[in-house]
Image (tube, rainbow, N blue to C red; front, side, top):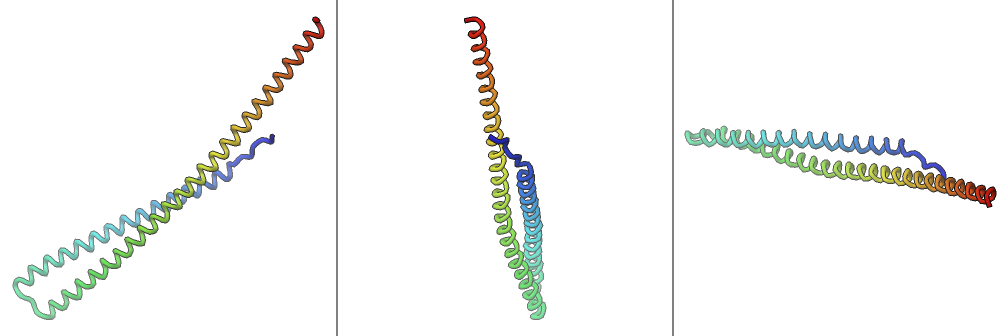
Length: 150
């Protein structure tokens, strides 16, 4: 049996892929947090604008002011719709990167198990060789003793 090959380089590459996948996932999650914060700001701003509008509306408003308010609220709704789509895209990217991380971790674990198995097999092989050498030495000593002292 030949000495097992060292998977060191493959293990390093697999670890690097795992680390890169973890970093990419962390970046996307951070983007998601930022997008959440933007969405919260948009929603708070919308609520605030609506509250201010209701206060103004109680004293009466001109048709021009009403039209301006409606345009402004439509733009806010468009921004919220866009942000909702952004959040959905980020969620999809998170799922994708979680899968990449799982795959990279699985690959690394598999390589580690293969390396460990090869090392165990090698050690068992060496132990068998050592046992065989010991058995042969014991047999040789036994033959010598019986040959010299019949």
